[in-house]
Length: 108
Image 1 (spheres, rainbow, N blue to C red):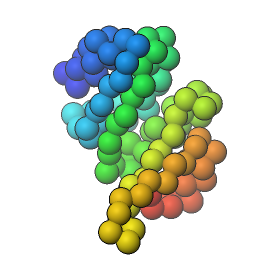
Image 2: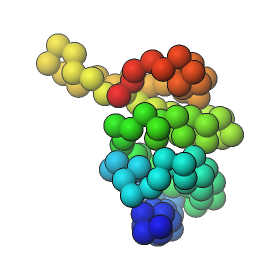
Image 3: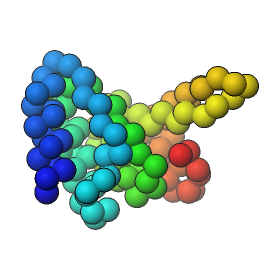
Image 4: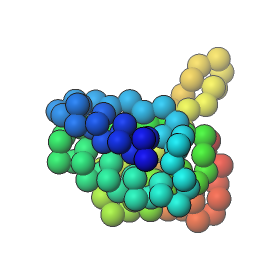
């Protein structure tokens, strides 16, 4: 519950700005993550907040995908990987995420 309050407060304090969240799933049971993502999508949209969240959790990615499907074009997953000595990002939209989670494609 503390984590949810912390995120809600962070969103409120980031109106018209940016919120950075490290390991969003920490302190949140996997069964509540989709609801938390929905809250983040809705509140961020209302307050004009851009949210960047990191995770290594497959449950969190699946929860994000389900919540993002209700908010077309408001969510993306960016996978970072080192290639030829540089860190490169690959962006996956909601449709990509649906395929990734359905087929259990590794993106972490």
